[in-house]
Image 1 (spheres, rainbow, N blue to C red):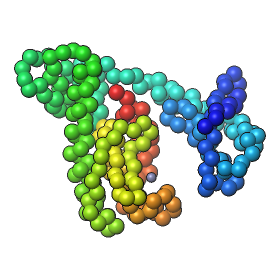
Image 2 (cartoon, protein in one colour):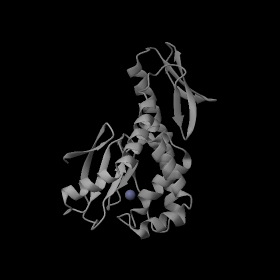
Image 3 (spheres, rainbow, N blue to C red):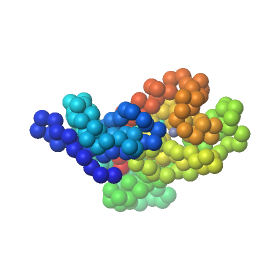
Image 4 (cartoon, protein in one colour):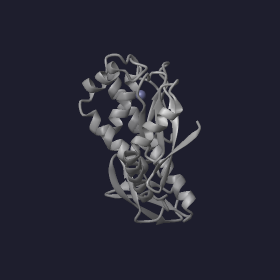
Length: 242
Ligand SMILES: [Zn+2]
């Protein structure tokens, strides 16, 4: 994708154009959580017309890019030291690094703390342990929730197997063959957000697109899905930073 740019005041804002065969007339401008700007446009759209349309909305774009970058800047990589915040099922816990030579060295939730026993104080080692703990929790919790949702949703015949996969901008995916993939970082999100992602992916077993019928299905089975989706969008940086 080639990069184009608009000017707003003294800011130069790059954007990329994504041809969308489903679009015929209008373009749609999105500002991603990391501040990048993507313009969905009909495939045969005239480049200068796109540029004019985006430039016309420069003020809106600049505002949203500014907000995204400010939010992003607050989310610094973890250092894996005691006192740091750890998210789990939408709750904030405090990391406590416990130095010990005893084995086995555990990772456990205790009150509002996540205690990690370790012999080394290498951040990389701690990061690996916390990451492994999240994955175990994710596998167990998602398995339970996928099973529960499959029982509840009339079009799901068998409980689908799923894989965990780190993804940058996606919480989950579902192939037409029913291959379900879930992002392990999702275990940090509130329960209704996890429910939404699982419902969304399972709904793709019935509708392989984001058609009106698809969203109607979501609405029927989780009336408050929009709240969950908005919350996830807002938390994305906080939940995926490591
Ligand atoms: Zn989808």
